[in-house]
Image (cartoon, rainbow, N blue to C red):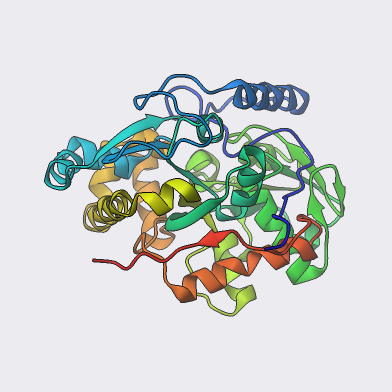
Length: 373
């Protein structure tokens, strides 16, 4: 194998920033300089974090306990539903396998500290995590599709990202969805979209502040996650470009398969040594999460109503908006199991990252296909 790819980041931040006030992003505006300082704090916490977890310690080379999966993941509505409905407990009892969970917004810190066997991050972030931990990893499942959209002030004449060249665009970090839009900018228009340079002035602010900055004309456009920007979308203070299509929709058009589920903002991965030595645990993990997807498909409105904090909504109007939005733009996969076609198409993002100057290699991480039962 060649050298592992390394994503080149231009600011200090990792993954999504935790929402404020129990899952709902605050509506106050955050100054750009203050937000940058906040990102620095999060980055320092991520580096320092390890901490205790339900599964105890475990160093970088520990292959783990049989029948136990130490799992770290951001707070999630489907996971809460599996627990509260008793499905998780029932399936654990039948299988004899237990999941020791660590619900956190710092999945990277927990995993890098050797305190998790399975973690969920973006597919295109796996190479960096491998480099930071020094442990080869295997991607074996998929979960959340990137849901980011590009918005402009409601009265803007812009129709595409190209129309915003040279303008200010609000983003919440220099990685995650920003990297995907960097790929799209290069593939669609030959433009350089990154923090700290390129053909746009990217303004890093907090996750719930990107949309309001666009609504108030403090920036020319913004990347937003719909669930963290419901008020400005609901009140039509901003307009979504590309007829509402997400970064994932545009990626599907670029690769020639509009039905592709990806790029993934949440895949399931594990250290390769643990993965290869725990086939039963891996199989059970996927069975449980695929059951969760089935429950989501059957009870979507109920789950949104039961766990509104996970969608950053409170009022009946906001809850209905999120129901309607997810009915049209569901960012949960149809199945957590991957197949050859999905792996091939998801892997296309790695040479695109290299072409855009966002990675030093076009090599994809290891994917493994576990047959569905």
